[in-house]
Length: 199
Image 1 (tube, helix red, strand yellow):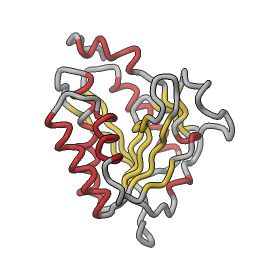
Image 2 (cartoon, one colour):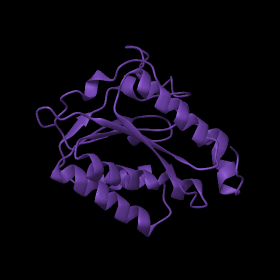
Image 3 (spheres, one colour):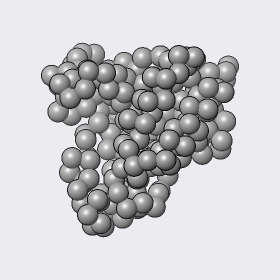
Image 4 (cartoon, helix red, strand yellow):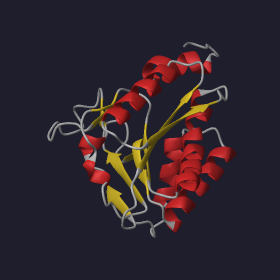
């Protein structure tokens, strides 16, 4: 991060789905901490996976529009306290790898920092291109890109910035959570993939 450069916090929601209300709640939380933010409304692409792939599009747009580092937070998150970890962070990416019975080393994107750097921006563009080429979960596509690029400057995201409900057995409970993710996809994914419009 360049001297004087502040982070912009972004999220997004698919219109006419339950994520809309969650995103508005997250925006109010960001406002309560006086954090600069932009929450993007998105079109429904017809499947949960394709909707999730728009995360890379939002990050690319935010990097272009704000010309500063971007922190993505999923719409279903709760922000408990000021996220000071991102102040002065100098890297291309910051994210958390989770080791669980489901995956030994899973790159999580619920909270994701992208530096306003050449490699940070290039990673997002590569992510967009890979998303456009397949119907995979965007998180897996990003992991393919990151794992293949040893030149990236990566800082590990502390677990308290991406606590996940239901994964207490795999994540430390101390220090207290700064950001908690509530896995709304477990409740809403099927409805979205079946074409239900729930607001």
